[in-house]
Image 1 (cartoon, rainbow, N blue to C red):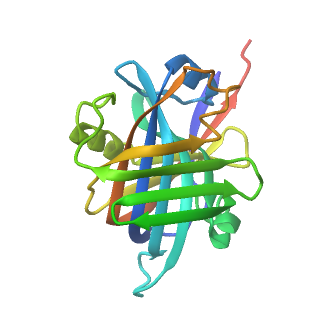
Image 2: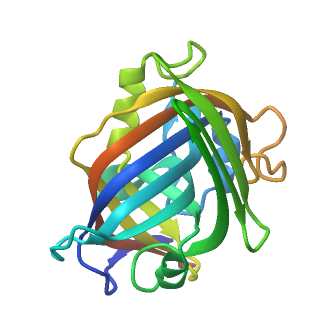
Image 3: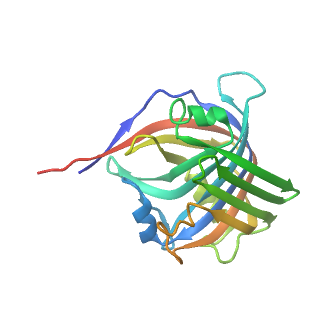
Length: 255
């Protein structure tokens, strides 16, 4: 039997800051392959028969506790592999994202992640080039496990091949996926964090390079089970991070 139990460890207060740049590079994925890669209690959230997974490449600035009245804060480059999921809690279906891995160039984030604030953060090196409306972000984790490279340019609308029928529908989908649960150092426990944006706005990116060691792992996703779908860009977004009750899942064998 699977129990999903809320648990709220000690956390920092609400964190505020600015999303200087956020790229959401997304794949459409065979739902059976995606379901097999997800831990309980999560299952894929489907759009037109596809699971949706992707990479979030986010540069944060002026990040600080909300109640601290100072004009400055922490700046960092971060990457998260994320999957749109749903799960059942108290008789209701909840939608959000499952985050199997987070990477950051901030030593503070990597030391405090999973201890003081939600989610284990692996230390990584980032190479970023931004020229007008063209963006290129490379990430290589120090432990050698994860690599990412996404580059592309701003365009007026989303690709015709996307599972989303418009930029607006893609924007709504990802705005609603604000509640995330991250892997922790304890099997079956997931740290909760919710993003709240004051001025949500996205643009479309035409991608010329996309690479992810996670989504290109053929032991997880065989050839043909993953295809690039679309990419979105966010800039200068005032936001807050709110800790949410963890999910703690334990299997019990009944008689």
